Image (tube, rainbow over all chains, first blue to last red; front, side, top):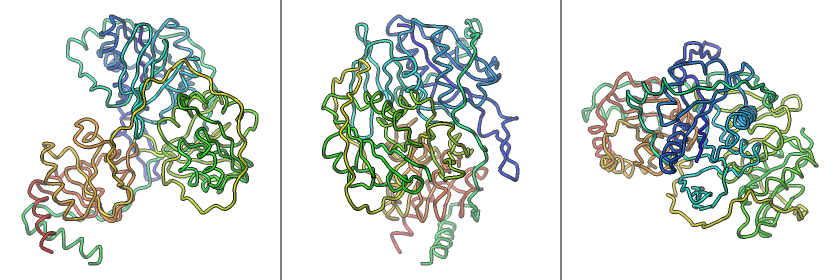
Length: 254
Length: 308
């Protein structure tokens, strides 16, 4: 089975710089692989191992994808090769543009792939839709909330975890699946995996991206802070705990 | 006002909230129902002007109604489609968005009508940023429970039964079964005790359980406690992607104060933090902070509450 796991890299939100007008800068931020995408990559690696298949990884975005450490990082998780679409138009792409770029990349790079896997949502927008949009654009069955994947002869059986029910479906291949965060526990690559990752092929795909922006961004700001009193008590003796209770009784008026 | 807003919910019982919300921005509200005749009947009384009803058979997949719903959207050209958040609705809405050439706006903080367009503020980066945006075409909004308040509706809207059929993507249903879910309503709780990674072992939750009982509080947690450790049901994690709560008091035990969690408790009247790390970011985001060992503080607090 030839499997493609899609992922997105995002700036580390702990490194955001916030100015007094709530303006945000990512300029000093380290970039990282979206945490929910790691479940898709792990699911792909496990399926490839179980079926004697191969796992490839794919991302679309702007110049940040040139980052060598992140390329090694994604390739150290059981994938054989990496495909990238790097275009300035994809900086801050909306979910529809992202899905269009992924669809174009898959059509040109791996038109014979059997299964495309996505994470539950990106670590920035978390709109939880790219997998579904991608399936529709490719004309393939697409399902979200997938908590188990079992390969069968030329088809796959999936289990979906919905709000209060579980649903088991049989699907023809190829298909696009979005996995839950509890489908697996993503591996932590070892030093050897990371060293080997540097030798794996990276294909930068020469694609022209035509998808128009569908969301017009007016502003991206830090959230309005909620003012808090920040009264601190140091120590955990019974007296200190009683002091805390005293504050609360006063605050809540009882 | 917008001329026409469509609303879509997997469960008809959630249509009154969506309808009341859509009425704030739209002159006409049309409800999409994919379900049973009883669902269509319920939708008809939920306050819309019009119901488009697709009967769904026992083995029909909700998601396979992408083509018929999209075709009617293209014909009717509403300005917006409000979708009540659920996993199946997300699956269907994602496919529809691809056909309509638009992106869904989710994790909403606010929505307003500005110069004839919906201006939507959505949380990003797990709450570390808020993005204001407008759709260039069809505005699709994923609406969480409680975002809009339901209003009493009178009358019955006409129900137009749709002849167009679902189109199978090739997937076939093998089994559907109910799964046990914990019934927690963190959103309505007056007091919530939240647990973070500062708790060393799952067994230690007993300490927190004792305190919660003494307080009459619900228990919640950070995402890693529910998903990485699986110490608690997913229904209990607090944050942008989980429960957004507004209790009178939020008690944070061993919670470091990462934005992904704190955004979920921003609506709390008072935040109390207990953490032995005096540099934990939560001490800058709480009303009362106790720098100490939660293993001493929780039982001491329980003791005081039981005596009073």
